[in-house]
Length: 480
Image (cartoon, rainbow, N blue to C red; front, side, top):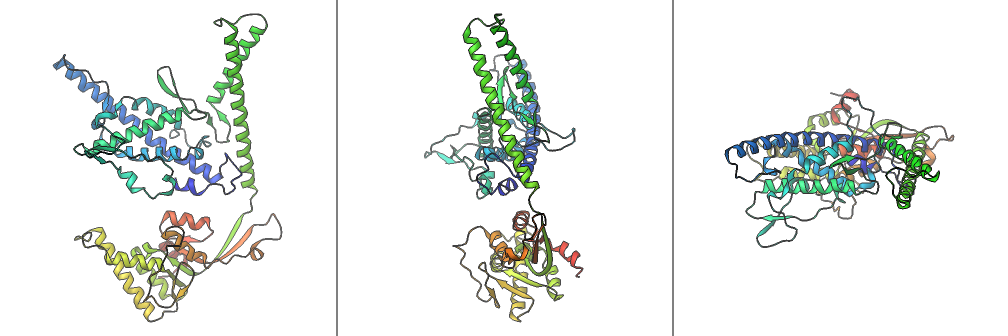
């Protein structure tokens, strides 16, 4: 989701188009989602068989007992309960950003044994989900004195995740005495049923209810961007309608049509299908144009001559000894963002309630204290290979007064760390723009960001900032 969100085209005039990276990221995300859905469908089918067997045994012992056709949420196996939050999060993202995945992206090039049709998988999941009774625990939309707010764990954990900010989040209340775990699963099933119904209500539906079950009606694009499968079915349908209309115009009334109204209806349907085919063709032309633009874009070559090394907070927690080795070799200047020092201070103080014997929080607190003591000692002796940098690019010789007001700054702490790296990226067009159009753009970098954080690494690469994890940089530099 993060990759899809951060690889959007910057040109707002290009509607219904994706960048190459966004196209691939969307395809990969939907493939991962379909694997989760496929596993949930199999678990639901297994649960349905188990419940049917229990019901059969009950009927044999008590013929007067009322028959239950639905699967109870409380009967879900443990594996299904573990997977539902992830599937629900994906459905939230798809409901909040329909334009980012519809029309569906081109299919990934995958081996046949692991390739999955996303929409056919969702249709099968929808058929299995219809047998689930999510009213086992009543859910209420309006608050009351006898009710309490139900907050799903995944919603609480991802409350600040930018790609999910647009997802619909309606408050849900349950009775105070109800089982919160079962209530949470009931809420998830409710959201998933709404999501699957929404797939049927798209401008170009991806699912449809035919023959008593849900089926996929989505056109399946191949790896070259051409739509096959469902599209072929529509073309055959067009051909059949052409034959019926031509037969009628020749004076032979088509079998099964009793009036001119049937012919008008077929002609109208043909026009609608023709418009849809034309619209798809226009979208494919736009996508092809974007792909050609990406192909002809200038390549970027980055010459990396590391002088300034910017570690993040986790670098001091997990690799302090390696940073000390880099500092002692006197070949590089370690630049410590002030926000990193403040984060280390907060971790070093910690909370007494979290620091139990042998707990992870206690280990982190000890390592943070050790890192803070090391930095204070080196800054006190004015180590020439150690600097502190504010988010505004001001260098500090001492960290005795290290509080910084970041209320006016945009972004989170990762963005502040990245801004410190960009301080050493002084790009001027006249210095790096080549004289010929076919030559690559050559950039020079003297700064390297040292981090294990994937999100921060992606952000750095999008800004042409070199990034490595500390062990890899040590191996490259042949230090220690």
